[in-house]
Image 1 (cartoon, rainbow, N blue to C red):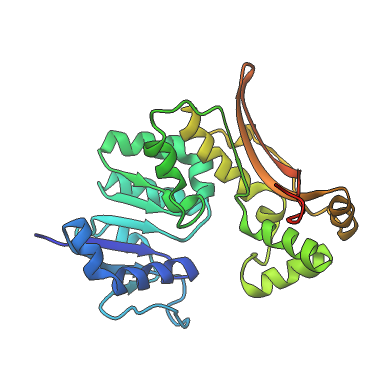
Image 2: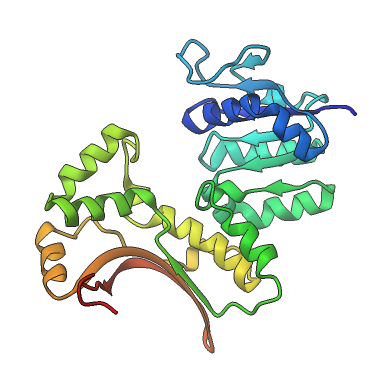
Length: 277
């Protein structure tokens, strides 16, 4: 059977890791899919940059449109990020009859309605499981596993960078700026960490989850977002003394007044292991 040819847009940390997984586990993936999944093309802004992935046998290009317009490509995997130029790439790929896989939560949260409508019209699939919770199949669980249930609310810690910062502040008594600098050095946070620490990233993810859970359009502009930049080490210590811990949560509720979407710091009660029953 003819292999499925894949073109990857972006060879950064996520894109490079995707290439490695697809190549390393090629035989097992082919067994499960019933067809070989082969990366034949990939694009990156700077081809001279040292890569974490094995690009042997892959045609490389600095222009992602080379992949979008290649008739031999069946699936485009978008791992560039952002919403401007990337949106046009995705829409053109769909126009060309290609299926799309993306981990771009901001693209889906802000432009998903348009993208999904065009994909439906062209008879192709836009898959976005990795846009929320990485390798945890939360989208599939809500869409398929819980399809027979009426979901009234959902809540969770959906930004890893913010959770890392708050955990370090609590466990080690560190200041916010100190932990943020470490998160950036470790690659957990971007050079501009605004999306992570101001709740925007979590808001994008919550928008996607709520759309699936409650059957509503993607409406990021309706999400209330509050960040964690104002939380101090003293706040964390006081919360601990009162029996609470501060977490940054995304919360969606189906209320009589409508769907409530909010991202903010919340307190939950912690229990002493010696006294909890």
